[in-house]
Image (cartoon, rainbow, N blue to C red; front, side, top):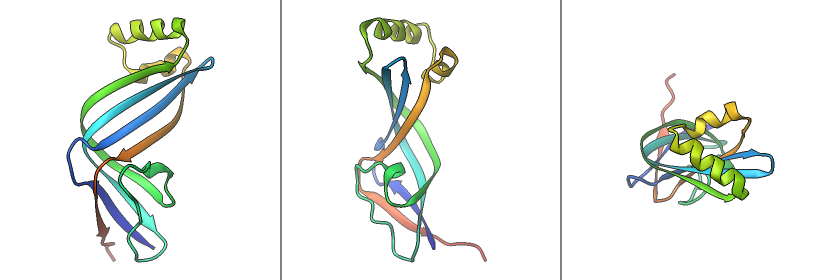
Amino acid sequence: MATWSVKPTWKKSIIERQYISKDGNELVVETGWRWGEFLVHTDDDNPPNIEAGVDIYNCEYETELVETTDGCWEEHDFDECDDETQAWLENFFDEGNSWLDLEEEGWIFGDCEMIIDCDLEITKVEENA
């Protein structure tokens, strides 16, 4: 088994999408990160075969988030929400609340995607003996 550091080669290329739902409505919060790093584990000494644009959490390898740094945008997609919920969410965010506060309002946090949308820097992590 080997461990690999996976990072973007270009800034502002990590896209995080968090899916949050309540009463048949789904909100997607997209956050862009300037930089970040993941650890990917392979069963052998071959580097992982991961391409740009793939959800690193939903690839064929065990993956861990090390860090993301310097969030540079946040967008809220209300397309899968009814009109009343859209209005409530817009008011909720206009009042200075964070999407992280939605759990206190009964929203359920679902899947999270992490996409590196550029060429990847993949480096083997040397284990200390």
